[in-house]
Length: 547
Image (tube, rainbow, N blue to C red):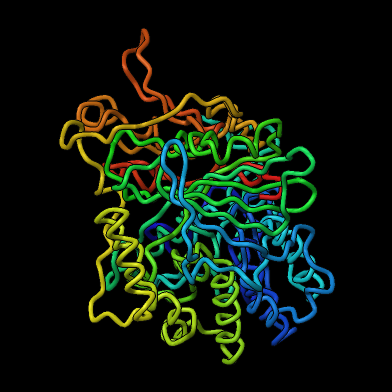
């Protein structure tokens, strides 16, 4: 074995334990768990291991989330008899366009946003509920183990993953209690890391999996869970808005889901293809909360949990090849979210089941052919039908709505396919265009700032560990980036990780890595592509409660 780009297999100065399985799955989200469950259902003799970087399964899972139940019905037919702890049947749908002082409710809810028959869930709680179902079938699940590298044979074939070392100091030295990460070798490695997984990113580059697709595009979703006074919540009610506080050139909108027990889940999604270098996704969310239609609902309530994550939103055009020698991609690692529906969980479960069925059908557990199988499935048929809706918003909100209505009417049968471009390339330089007027209001609702929001994410990182946010050329940050963009990393990060400080040591970039909530926005939106997010020590990061 040899060490190759993005992988590890060269001789090491430390001795590592080795575990061997038929299949190793990276990520205990809905795709990874659905895959493991289905594979064991089809062939109980296949050994399956799932590793998860979070301290517990579900602790770093964040989503809307309204789910379509059909794939879950197929995976676990009796699940409705003992549902996950947060599972509220969808009720009334509302869709609003907001102005600063009011709003107008659309008389018709777009078809993709009609939720009759769906369920409002906590995706984190759903995954924590799915994990025992997998373990009952013989799947081994290891939370707190972060896959740091992929293992490769001499010909490049993926042979498994290496777990990151524990007990490494910030300067790279070994602390007392240092434990080298184990090597997990497998016939097939399944990447189910979610959006912008760092191993997925490396493998896409190594195997040129995106050579025939558009770049992947992303949004950032910022979410909070609130406890409200008695009598305000209508369980099952679902509200979506667009318009204020975003300008018409920025793709953005909100969700508000009424749960049981006087709780609501609310959030704001901003497309990372925005142009304005001064745009602040976290601040836009806080402004929306203080809108006259939202503030009365939340006043007097308390935040229970908060967080943020990237959402893969490139869709059909951006799907990379999902197979390579020894490995395959499923769920958000492949980018299967249906943007107009604002739903990806059903797609994640579908893709996981499909991957399991593909591997179980052959005696050799060979990923070859999975790409064609996925592209010929209902997963891709669904994405193709809506492929032009999100890119249509690049020409503004009103054009996007009209284009979306057309594409819905013709069910995606337009003879054209709109292009998707990389988010990092969309940012305007300072002064290049007139900045939109931010018609913002004085806000009173918690949290008061991003640092307080980090508290509600319960994020934890040992500060004496290598910084997992690698800036390849920090000098650019205090020279070109300051002049050309005004350091947008200090604004687009929802956790105030990046600061430009000017002290006795001079002007420099300060990285507050302990604040990081693992949303990956910096890895996506940095206009110079010099920020590289890698996984920190296993168990580090946010510990979300029911997001």
